[in-house]
Image (cartoon, rainbow over all chains, first blue to last red; front, side, top):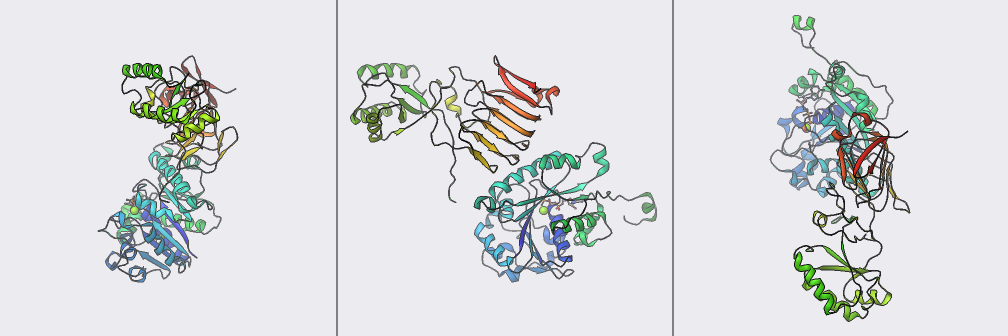
Length: 271
Length: 259
Ligand SMILES: Nc1ncnc2c1ncn2[C@@H]1O[C@H](COP(=O)(O)OP(=O)(O)OP(=O)(O)O)[C@@H](O)[C@H]1O
Ligand SMILES: [Mg+2]
């Protein structure tokens, strides 16, 4: 029976889709049967980051509305056997995400997979609510800045009151903090918040710290999850985060951000 | 679920009757109403029967309710009646209310975000507010687990997150966790926070000027007691992140370190 994990944040553009792809790929690399689902109806970013946008025929909304079978909409990743993507629709709106429809799809996936990762849209409206509603665990993606931390706090409140687990009075959704776009130099200058301060405010366990890294943009342009770029510090950070998500105890490393050094610039090689 | 059940308290206007609903009573009432014709529109009206000895039979209540409603007074219930009076009131479609606390005569003004006294009630005479006797600690996006002790104290052991609002509508509110910025604590009594306090805390919202706020680490956006408030700018750096208590001293909201 699959674990359902929502990747959420409240604030937009903090790295949810990047993290969904990276964690999904990381779990598949560790031999876990994983499906990643795009809940950002109307934008459809996940299939682009996964490099499968040209292979989309049917989508999540088609399945919810009974226009296609789940099997027809699922796209198998070409690099990782264990990974599938359920893309969303670019033309429908969020109202197409009904609770019953989402539940039906998740139920069908639950028996087949080990992990179901839901990429939430920004905000706290319907799409975000549907993405978190059925979750067992939540990866709360946060940037080291005040507004992002506050939105994460808001989302944690919603998880503890508006999720299925909360409504049914079951064990609460298990939250994990994933700090992304972390830049120690800017933290030292006081331009960004310190890890300790963020942890103190949110008081949830830390899943990982992903440094600011050009490898992320490069990977998304190539349509590859950054976890497959084993040389990048962002990729390494996601590998670590995946191990922790699987329950392993690993020390949290603060990897330096990658910038192009003088040598590399002279040699013209990307960092 | 197609609905949600919430506890919410409102301020009501209480009419203390001192005798039967006779011609003189209606005359005086009409005179009073003519001074402020729309003053009581939409205000829940409760009749206090403590001294209304002349009012007994059910016919009395049916007639009274008809007359009051004809004057656009929305009477909803009675209190402090005898068994016969309560039975009569029931026949007239009124409920029996218990408890309630009077608002101070010149009630503190401008309490922000307080549902317990609607905007409209704010400028009405604050004679005898009533407490709904079925009230519970109500929290929007409730921070679990809220426990209500016998005295009406609400205990919160989980962090109160941005956007959450906890309301202790009978007594004190005790939070043994941190309170995020954008979260709101509201209590009729005192507010205690044993964790970082970054949100808003409103104590004594029904006008209890003796209510206090106790904080382990004060980083609040706003604190208020009985409607008098200070924002983080007003609180000043001396008390910032300190263990403090806030209380009213002659209409001034004081913030002092806890020794
Ligand atoms: N660690 C990182 N280093 C550098 N850039 C990053 C990092 N993580 C994400 N980004 C960049 O930030 C931008 C937003 O990322 P992403 O689309 O994953 O965010 P999102 O939270 O899904 O956004 P939305 O709220 O719009 O869905 C992208 O351009 C991405 O390349
Ligand atoms: Mg996204």
